[in-house]
Image (cartoon, rainbow, N blue to C red; front, side, top):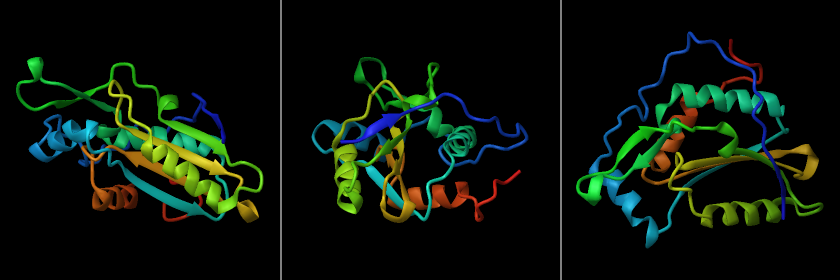
Length: 181
C-alpha cells in the first residue's frame, strides 16, 4: 500500500513555449476509436516506467507536467462520444481539467523496494480510467533503495502506443538536470 499526495501548486513556465503537434487533432481516427471502445473487454493501457537515480523536487515535477500539458494538447483532452453512438468519438478539451487529478506522488511501503514498485505498477495498470477526464495518469514513487525514485506514466491506448510514448517522452524530457528556461 502507498500513501498518495497531490498538489495544485506548481511554478508557471514561459508562455513563449509553442505546442507540439503531437496529439493536436480533435478527430479520433479509426484505430483510436477502436482502442477506446474496446476498453470494456480489453484493458490494455500503455505504461512507461522510468527508474530515477534520485527523487526530483515535487514542485519541479509538477511544473514539468504543467508545461507538458500545455505543450501536448492531448494531455488536456478527454474523449467525447458521438451523439447516439453514431460515428467516431472525438477528443475535446476538458473544461474542468485539473492537473492534481492526473499527477500524484506515492511512497512505497517501508522495505518494499523493487517488488513493491512492480506491484504498484501492476495495480495502477489494472485500474480503469475515469471516462470523464483525459485518459492518463502519472505517479512519482519514492522509497526505493539508495534514495532512488521511479516515474510511472499510464496512458490509454487510444491516445498512443508504446512507440508514441517513447517519442513523446523524448520531446518532453530535459537532456540535463537543470531546468530549461
